[in-house]
Length: 404
Image 1: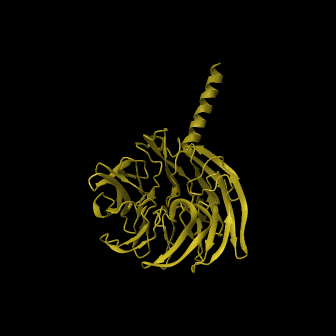
Image 2: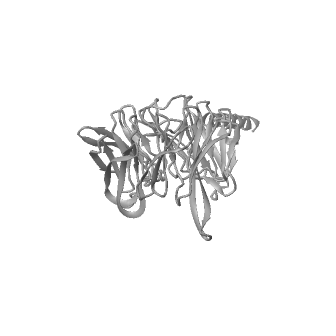
Image 3: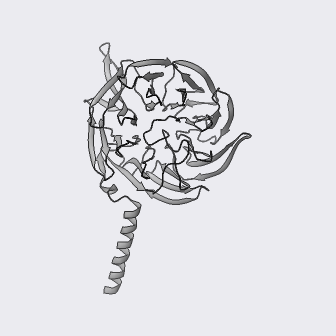
């Protein structure tokens, strides 16, 4: 009997050791109050991970697992989108708050903050226009200019030094995506009307609309942020269930319907591998691998992960694709054939897209209970690096969403 207990104890230790290898040793202790459900973390050049919670606090997570508060909003303010990091290491993040207008009407307004890594507020851009919160997230061009869209339908371009408005474009429809910025400064994004109708995809440069594209089908709009390939091809998905490929002139190269009649919605954003394969998730729970050739797209494989996928996949150089499913905040590790190599439940649920640091560690947030009062930052060491021209949400670990 004692020998049996000894064997069982040794087996338990081995199992525990395996967990410590799969889970970064400090991960289980990195819990935090408030919800991280929508928080897409970003990585600074100092190796620290930045994210926000639902209670108006911006945090940094050190590679050793220490969490520190960087900045706290005033009462009544909340963060409206995940942060992006400039080349100088400063944090750009959107906010929202409610104000009373005309003595009784409550409207929501928003703005953008630039915060130093030490937590100093450098500037605050705010519009008192109703619906001016940046829900999709800011993008940063190679020249340092900052771009973001608002729920009121305005695309802003700001000067990175002082936060002043350089130009703006009014679309008349909400912008809920993170814009993609080409190397020539062209900004790509789709709009969201909330009504079931044809939707519009825009290309804008220097405050002028270069061209627009109308969606194939009717839907409420674009939730999916665009990605840019090495040849300048722009890939985007719409809630109408189509993946679109366009050239820089706005010519539709092809469109591919990748959802069923039962569930058209696509909130996940496309990513692009080193060989040009495009990966995208759907609300139905499928991951698609799509080859984009001159003669047209080809679905290489699909994988049903049996959970909604509102998050964006991540591609690593070890031929691995990492996908976070909403239910159970489940991290899937797939190979290039779509085979599931590992499946790990990390919490209750999430819409946080994973980010990979330069050291090859994956991070994303998840809530631990139904009401979202407790959350966790999960990490996984992969011993790899991001791979491809657009390997994750926002293209790089700083979430700049620009094609260099």
